[in-house]
Image 1: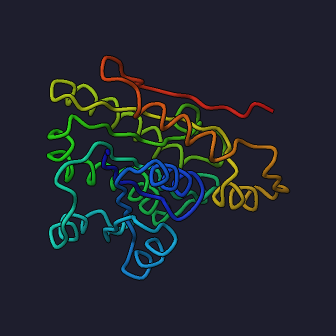
Image 2: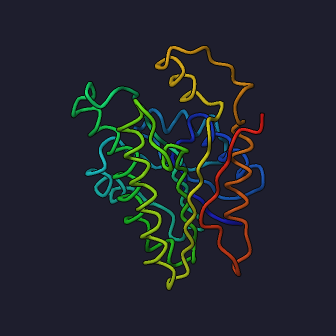
Length: 229
């Protein structure tokens, strides 16, 4: 049985991954932004453990985890949570930049730092769910794409630094996926949302699980998942 900790289990890709891991008998830890959300996740995912830590305030993650009992060993850390606010750079206020970078980049960096001892102990795996916007920045996606370009750099540097410790690092770049975030993006774009037009969360989850299940003689460093329709 492997032990996994993931963010973003409340919906979409994260919820699918959490359920798949539980269904196969693994030990699953879910990060929740507050105690109420943690209780909701435990009810939704029977058998899962929870930790409380707000990705919107990465400076407090060290204090939060220091007052809880994270797993002693960790086979994978799965960064799936993310936020998005579209808009032209000329109209994007500092708060949107700070909030986006905090949740999408700084929090994953800090959470990884805090859990590296457990990952090294298990020769574990860090997975960053990035985005097609982490490879190409389109108009009105400036703040989100910047956070995802940064996330790619974080993953690449971490991979080089931790290779000698046996820690594997994978970045997954999903295209548009049928999640509540995608529905929000369509509203911001003023477009009609059709979930059937995009990748299912189950397909992205399969790609992610393929990476962490790969035998130890190999490492999937980057995976790009695109809509097949």
